[in-house]
Image 1 (cartoon, rainbow, N blue to C red):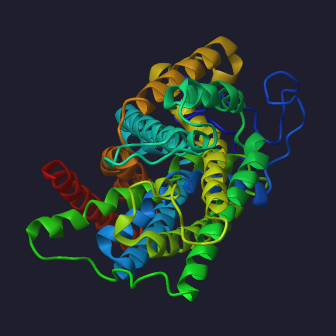
Image 2 (cartoon, rainbow, N blue to C red):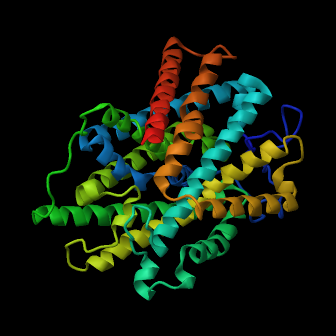
Image 3 (cartoon, rainbow, N blue to C red):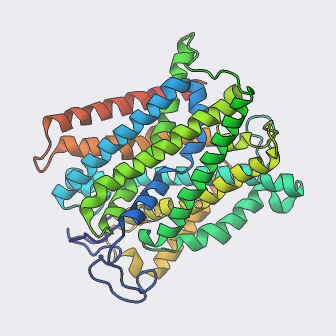
Length: 450
């Protein structure tokens, strides 16, 4: 039987609280779902698209910059290792949730650590998702209206087409995007309703990767690309500490744990979740490796924290301006379609934090609307004041993201309330906690010192 979807918070005092939306087997018909049509479970392909869209967000734009920090060889190896560690943490999370009968990540934490653990998880998901969506808006603003965060002004697409003016400034662009794109897409109440936009967003990410790789290969064939930095430049203690600043970016790049339960609960066959996770991680790893390799190959030491901002100058190829705009516009459209997937989990967990014992969010349109509007407003305002995506990634990646992705699944495993943990599981859990805490603590220290 497919478990019904619920929010990160349990909206009732009893253990079998009414879920956020009806389960796949029973439908309330008209009015409380997205279309009033019968829903018989999400398909494997739709679930892969939704999970892949959750993963491939803004993190990909900062990955070429991590190659500049780590060097090409260690950087690519770390991308693969991060994917493997993410797969292991999701497998633990799903297995222990199933043993506890937990229908959400919040319930799994609540089963292991009580209301305090559930509330802490919800808080971390809120912080992570707000940070990620702020990054999305920053990138959209950088690409369409331009950025001067590096000290040099990089022209935006609309700025290049029409010249600088009031309506294509950052504030105006983000206002139009929020009201015209994010708000309508944020009004869907079921994850599977976004499967088509997710498929388009994955396709747009692939377009970005193909164009970037094609440009790099063309320039490489013509001998226009120098030898990239294969290994990091380590010459003193500060350069060693700086290597750790890449850790939060890698953590953020793969985080999708907050959407695993909603996707799992909507599947026709919930046991398909393992191949869905691995297929998504494989697809996203291929996209990440290709983007990191060719993005760093193209720009080398000039690679910016947001590599999209590099695509505002002459690339040294025919039709350079066309390809510049195609790369940037395709990825901005991708981020616009990723936004509602991440926002879905944010709204559920914020509702669980604020209203843990009231009726499901889908039954209260006023609460649904007010919460949606408030969260969009907070994200919009933050995106207008945070200077660049590296700062946002450092904060969310080193705190909330690492907790949601690695520390909490490992803690649930070590708690082992249902006695199913094997020795290998416990060793893996200890390794994940130690690695996550040490790497990200050093990253925060290094970033603060610099």
